[in-house]
Every structure is written in C-alpha cells, then in structure tokens.
Image (cartoon, rainbow, N blue to C red; front, side, top):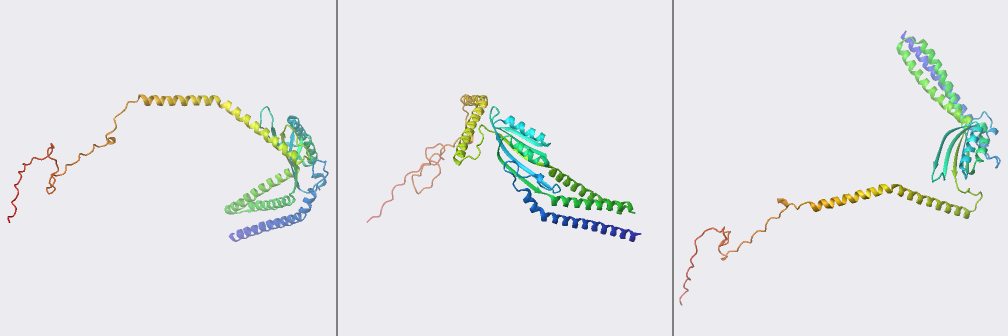
Length: 343
C-alpha cells in the first residue's frame, strides 16, 4: 500500500510539473511573438496626425485586438476659471468618462490665481474627441500623449492563468483520491498556493483590462489675468516673465502685511507681558536686603610680620619682646669687655 501511495504521489508531481512547463513554454513563445511586433506597433500608434485635430494618437486607426494603453497630459490657462472648469466637466460627461481624482487651490485673495487638477478616465473610443473638447476649454500651453503596448504582458498573464487553472483542477482531483491524511494535507497546501497565484494574476489582468478600456488624461487648469500669446518672441516672453515676477512680489508683500496685522494683538500682548516682568524683577532686586556673606566667602586676616632677633647669633624664640604672647625669660646682664694683650 505504501509503495502504491508513493508511486501515485510521484506521478501526480510529475504531471503537475509537466503541465506548468508546457504553460510557461507557450507563454514564452507568445511573448516573443508579441515583442517582435511591439516596435512597429509603437511607431504606428505614436505617429502624429493632423495638427488641428487636438490629438496626436488615434485609437480608431489601430487594430482593436491590440492591447494599447493611451495616456495624455494637458496644461491650460484661462481668464474665466469657472466657465473653463465647467466646460471640462461637460466634456467628461459627453465622453462617458469619470473623474478619478480632482483638486483645487487658490494662491491669492478674492479668488484670483486659482488652479485645479483633474485625472480623467474616458473610454478609448472617445479619447480623441475628449482631448479636442477639453483643449477648447482654455488656452493649451502643453500637451503630451503616449501609447504603451501591453500586449506581451497581457498574453503572459493569460497563459499563466490557464496553466494555474489546469494545475488547480489536477490538484483537486488528487485531493479527492487521497487515502491518507498526510497526503491530503500536502495536496491542500499546494492547492492553496496555486489559488493565491490565480487570484494575483486575475487582479493583474483586471487592471490591464481597465487601463486598455479607459484612457487616462491628466489636466491642469490655471487662472491668469492675461493669456500667453501664441508664437511670442523672446523679448515678449522676457517682459511677461518680469511682469509676472513683479506681480508675485507684490502679492508676497501684501501677504506679509496681512500676516503682521493678523498677529498684531498677540505681539502687543507679548510686549506688555515682557515689560511687566522686567519691572517686577527690578523692584524685587531693590527691596531685597543686603545679606552677610558666608564664612567661606570672607577672606582671612593678613598675618602679622614677625620681628627679627637683635643678635644674629642667637636663635629666634618665635615671639617678639614686649608682645603679650612672649615667653618669660630672665634679663641678660651685659658682660665686661675682655682685656687685650699687653705688649
């Protein structure tokens, strides 16, 4: 019985490995076939169209079976911010798309210098018409488009999914035929791993389908006082840059002045508190009595000079005569001089 179980497990493992190898081989050959045509497809999709169409890439001119992801970036300016904003939203609704994200900011007073940023998802069939409608909502300063061929990646994901699903089917059959608990646990462990990989590749395929079906367009709209003239000379651009810098400098000064006025009550209160604290400290120092210095801070008195002995030959007793601390000693009688030699 043990021999049959071992042979059965070995046969199941070999069959699973053979199925996985065949799936990867087919996946690699499919990826190679798609990569051989990727360069020509990218060149065809990126070729510029008519200059006045508002879009350089036309999804309608590409085979529908090819997996291409279209993205675009628009930067525009306008003097009527509300009208341009509404025109962009109307273009999104007309194209059957939706706003993936949006944000707006105001950099000045009274609603001036406003900016908004949109990330729009539109069906690939309405990609070109939407770009034309959105570009008409304001003065286009910058436009960039790209087409990414994801056919090789898509085929690779599909091949891996097919291989994993076959492996899951085979493991399910082996689990039904397992005769021991150890074999069943091992098969279920492999089955859980295969199921996790299937869910991961399914999510990747779903994301690719969404990116292929809906194009992504990033739009930035800025509010300006005057539109940038098309085809302006270098001198005109210099004048416009200087004028814009001066306007920004004036706005900065206005902002600083408003900030100071806003903080004025707090500054006055802080100055008053500081003055009161200084006056209290000075009054406290004047009223504080002078205290005696500690003993360790009083310097010792200078030592009295010692008197030198009258006779250099006699030793010093350590006390000068006449001092209270001099020791008592008998007075010394003077000795008569010795007679000299007689000649």
